[in-house]
Each structure stands twice: as C-alpha cells, then as structure tokens.
Length: 551
Image (cartoon, rainbow, N blue to C red):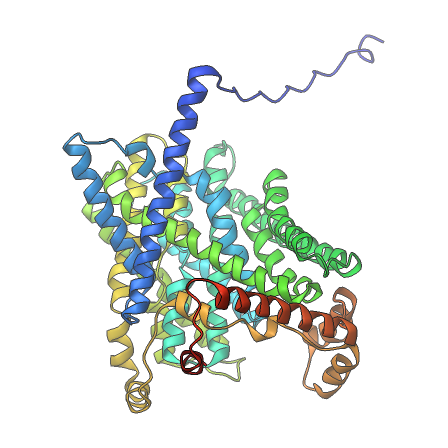
C-alpha cells in the first residue's frame, strides 16, 4: 500500500528570466538603442556603397566582397577612435549570434526558398539532395577528420567545425554562374545545392555539438555515430515536414479566406505564415532554418498564386529588400569582427584548415558530379566541375555558427572563431575577387562572344533583382486556361505530373474572369495614382520629350 501511495517527484518549474527595473533597465534600453542605431548606420553606408557600385558599373566586383572590405575599413576607423579615447563602441560593434539566428538568418533563408524556380528545382531534386546532404556530410567528415587527426580539438567538436565550415554562400556562387550564362539546369543544380546546403550544415553542426556536450563515455564510437545519424534524420525530415505542412496550411487558408480585396490583411497573413514555422520548430527542438526553407518553397509554389497581384508584387519585393539588408548587415559585421573579436591565431592550424576545406569541397564536387553524369542528360563538364569547386565561397553562416559553439576553455572558442573568420575572408576576398579573371581564363569563347555583343559581365545581385518581377510569380491563368495548359504538357512525369494534375488545383485558387479584371484594375489604379502624384508634385515634369526618352 505504501508503494502505491508514493507520489512521483513534481517536475521542476522553468526558471523565470530576471526582468531588469529602474536604472538597470534604463541602461539596458540605452545600450540596445545604440546597438540598433549602429547597425542601421552600417547598413545605410553599405547601401550607398552598393548604389555606387551599380552607378559606376563596377559589375566585376561582387557586393559581398565590397561590403566585407567596407566593414574592415570601418572596424579600423573605430579602433583608432577607441585608441584615441574619443568614444567606446566595443559593445555596439560586437556581433551577437542570437540576433543572427532569430532576426537575420530567417528572412535570408525564406527568401531563398520563396524566389526559387520550382520547375527546375523539382525536376532535379534527386541531384540537388545528393550534393546538399551527402556532399555536405562528406565535406564535413573530411574537414573534421583531418582536424581530429591533427589533435587540435576535442572529440566530436572537429566534426561540428567541419559541418559549419561546409556551408557555402549561394549569393556569390549564383553571380558567377549568371555571368557565365551556363545551362539553366546546371544553374539550378548549384543554386538548389547552395540553399539546401545551408540548412543541412546548420543541422549537422547542431547534431555534432549536441553530442559533444552530452556524456558519451560509456557509449562506443559506432553507437555514437548511429545515435547522431538518427538525431540528424529526425531533425532534417521532421523540420522539413513541419515547414511543408505550414506552407500547405497557408495555401488552404488563403484559398478559402479570400482576402484579395484587402491587400494589407493579406500581406499581414503572409508575413505571419512566413515566420511561424521558424518559431514553432525551434520551440519543439527541431531546426527552424530547415522548416522555414521548405515553408518558403511550398508557399511560393502554392500560396503565392492565391494572392492578389498587388500583394504578389509587394511580397516579392519586401522579401528581397529584407533579405538584402540582413545579408549586408552580416557581411559588414564580418568585416568589423577583424578588430572587435578577441582572436587566437595559429598559422599552422589555419593553413591546414584551408587545405582541408578545399580538399573537402573537391571530394564533394568531383566524384558526385562524375556519378551523376551516368544518370543525367545534361552532363556536368570538367570545366564546370572546377568552377563549382572554385565558387564554394564561405559566407555568413559559418561565421555565426562558430560564435555559437559552446567550447571550453575560452581559448578553443577563440581559435575556432578566428580560424573561421580567416577562412571566410580568404574565400570571399581571394576566391571571390579572382572570379572575373577565372571567367576570362576558362571561358574564352563566351568572353569573345560577349565582347562582340558588348554584353557586360554583371556580378551585382541587387541590380539584377531590381530589373523585373519574376514572371512565374504572376499567374494569370483562369481555370479553363490552366486545364488546357496541363493537357498540352504531355512531358510531365512523376511528382511534376501529380502536382499539375491534383495538388496544384487543390491548393491554389484558379482565377475567374472577374478576378482577372479586378486585379488588372487594381494594378492600373495604383499606377495611375502614382503617376498623378508625381506629375502634380514639385519635382514633376510636364516635358513630353523627357517622358518619351524614358519610355
């Protein structure tokens, strides 16, 4: 009887975070205010820099290289100011990993998924997954295994470092391929791998770091590997399923709750659904980045076509702007970290890590490309393999992940952080800066044809994004036209056929002629209103010659 009445111990309540009041709260508010001011000031200066690059047609210079260089220059100036004791900006210029993962990274990843060309992506999903998952894991194991055998860092932490440093930067990569005018399928192969690679790298890093923190002294190496693999698969597929489900719910919601006539409410719902999977996934200990990536892909494929034309354009441009500002902020703070981060530099360790990173990328690209060529109609040539290997630049994600690693003692954390910064700057400044000479060296025929047609090689992502709205994001097919379009497409197979035949009609609302007319009137009204305000304003021009010249 005594055993039956024994009460189980009560669960330990969550500790309530302390709330600062009085003078402490005021000081914290002032410090946060200065941090926000400093961040906005840095972004503003970087926007002016990007504008000058576009204005003076310096298209050969990737924007990430220019912004990092500006960050280094600003960091040097701030250091001189602090040395002269004119001001103290140490706290403001320090990069906060939590701010990156909660505020800066989600818009970048969501925009990547949302602006994806889904047709080529789904047709090449097998190849993209092979590069992104298997390739990233191979690269991580080569870098991690090399560092482990060098004996520099404790068990499992080398694999966390190998995972974080395997995240490539898609911005510079795609600028290179757009400049080369490569086959669009190959372009999608690399772009899809770059996007998915970021999410895989983050999940791999969290897996390795989580197992490094836990007590595995009684577990064999093989059992640890199987546990880590199971954890990774749970994180990967669980987060992807959550993001996909959220995207499908958003499509169903905006299909049946017709908010087209109130674009502000419609846009508000889209913003909520965009960030919702990140918060939910992180709250239930899944990967928010993986969830928000798949949510972006699904929302772009289904939900976007349930929106009014005004909200379609607004959503696309807002996401691009926010993602651009977040990327710019991270690259600028990366340059600032040269002077603000407490460094521990070991030349031999840095050199070995650079060699291992380049080797890991090579073992990722060349064998997998050779394997894929057996199954692909569009072959990956040796020249393209080399450019894919060369364009594996490292960016913001490795830098932020390195600051997020919970390493003890502090010297190990500083060593990993410094080495990551050096590798990121090495790939961005040296490899990214030598992109133009490589194109001219390896792409002689293309360069000659460009000179004949006077076509400039443009590495500016911002200018290209500002030229036009994505045509596939402005669907104006009525239900009858859509059915006729599908009937004509007899080449659709597998998922593409299933999607066109059943999923797309179920999750998207086909336009009626009335909807089509209302959308066109809405867009025309906005355009006429803007034009009337410009003509009536103090800077408006009545000169017909000026208008003809602009048109």
